[in-house]
Every structure is written in structure tokens, then in C-alpha cells.
Image (tube, rainbow, N blue to C red; front, side):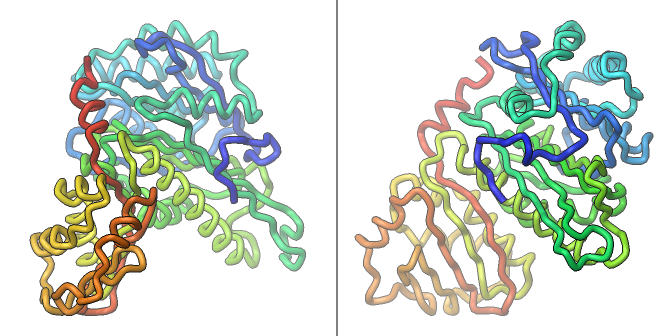
Length: 422
């Protein structure tokens, strides 16, 4: 699997086309209207934000998936306006763009899946999208260049596009698909307001958008649990700033164009191979999102071990990841392990501080609730100056564990978000 920005067309899944144009939504004048098409239709699975405040495209997109039984022919994504907290007018405007897209791309209205990202509470300029749609016809295609247009147009405060891909070859012993292959291609955006808490269907998941394309042949019912599994270990295990967005969406489309079915004779191997490849693609995209976080200078892998349950381990990880004191300490490489213990202590998880052990990178910092005599503060500080490192905290209670990727909090993050709407 590769996550390079370079996308050889031969590596992209069959049955899809991509493209983008300038609709005039972004004040910068950059690409802001992205389109992905599945001319033959595709089966879909989706996850959405758990935030109780959700944007119009989330509401419309859920209805469309329910109405079609999980069929999608077109994805319509705008950046620069979240179409959130815009009332009934925002929903009607979203529907208007879906109607226009269906007419332009000759598909069923309900098979258009909308997404938006940008500023919350600003009236949605549907007229700009409708006016720009006819100009997309000669900008859409199956090549790498077309896919890169799509990946670029969905960005907001991101500094670079985020893509990942996998090609899965099937060995010569398979009874149905010997020597064949299928592909997965993922595109994401997100740099701030990132603490996805994704769920399937009800409740659903303006800032993280992820689109996954595969030419495997699979039904929505088959895709849903595999997407949930991949998302739990990737997008649900990252945080930049602890803010769960109103627009977060992860959409998986399967065109079936490879001819490889998920559930053919002896297909347990196909399902396992797809699940593994999907997990790799999602993990790559999740890592790229945090690595491109607003003002981020350090990535911190939290590895919580020795918990009574995985839920407890996750609660401790999130408490540490969302602590402003820890995040600011990480920005300067300050090995202030006391802040780690304080955050774990108020997480609500029951443990004995006297059984806790902590490592920062390779350095043992704390054992049995006390700082170890050999603690090397200078060496630990040097480790924390690296772009990415791991903090391991063992609670000494049980055998459950979790991994969670987060980052530091810098003055640049404050500057970006202090005047984002102006």
C-alpha cells in the first residue's frame, strides 16, 4: 500500500471518475467544488458525526442512502461553506444542488450524496454550485490528475491533499479469482476541529471528510461492518483539538468493476484481505490528518496498556490527548509526566496511582507511582523534540490496551482559529 501524493492512474479503482472546478465559494478563488462519479452506480456504507448539531448535507445524505438502499452515483462536495445551522433554507439549498447534479450527471436524484465543509452559520450559496456544475463536464475523468483535482478541492485549512491507496492481488490458488486484483483509493481532508466520533446510521458523524473508493463487488450490508471496524482503529482514534465537528463524514463506495466479489466461494480470504487493506488506507489517512493539523509540530502516539477494559484505556487516552496542559508541554518538549498522571486521574477510570508505569519514547519515567531514580530529563526532552514519538502509560490493572494519535497545541493553532471566520 502507498499513501504518496503521486497517483498512477493504473492504481486507481475501476468504475469511478473524479474532478473539480471553481464555483466562487472560497474567497481565495481556489478549487471549491469537487465531484466523484460512479457511472454504473456503487454500493455505499457511511458513518457520520455523533455531534447533535449536524449540517444540512448530513441530513440530506442520510435520507438519500435510506431511500436508495445504499446506492450512490455521484458525490458532490463543496468547501468554504459548511451549510450548518442554516435552517430549512440550508436543507432546501442542499437539495437544490443535488437536483442540479442529478440532471447534469444523468443519475437518480437520491443517488447524489452531498458534503460540505467550511464556516458554520453562513447562508449556503446553492446558486453558485448550480451555475458551476455544467463546467465540470470536461474536468471529470478516471485519471490520477482528475483524482488530484478532487483531493485538492475539498481542502480548507489543510496545507496538502491527503490520499492513500492499496492494490490487493489474489493468489493463484483461489477457486474463483485466481490472479485477479481489486483496488482501494482514499481521499481525506481535515486539519482542525478534529476529534471524530463516528457512528453508523443512527446517530450518524465540519471538518473531517473521507471518501473511500473500491472496485470490489460488495453489498451495503457487507460494507457497513468492515467500514465500522476500519474507522474505529483509525478516525475514531485520533484527535487534534478535541472538537467534534458538525459535518464529519466517512463514505465508502464499491463499484464492483473489478469483477471480484466479497462473498464468492471460498471468499473468506477476500473479506480478510479487503478488511486489512481498508484498515491500512484508513490508518494512513488518519495519520495524514493529524500530521497536517493546524499548527502541529509534534505527533504523539499514546499507548495505554494495563487497563481493566479497552473502554477504560480509551478514556485515559482521550483525557491525556485533550488536556491543554499536556498539549502545550508537548509543543516545547517538556517532559512533565505529572500532567499525564493528572489527566489519567480525572478521566473517571478506576486505578491505583501506585501501580502506574510511564515511558516517554524509550525512557522509563515513572514506576509504581514514583519517578525512577535513573530518569534522564535531558534525554527525554530530546526525544520529545522529535516530530513523532510514543508515550506509553501502563495502569497496572489488567490486560486491555488502546492506541490513540494526537498532537501538540501551538500558538499557530490559536492564530489560525482566532480569526478563522474573518
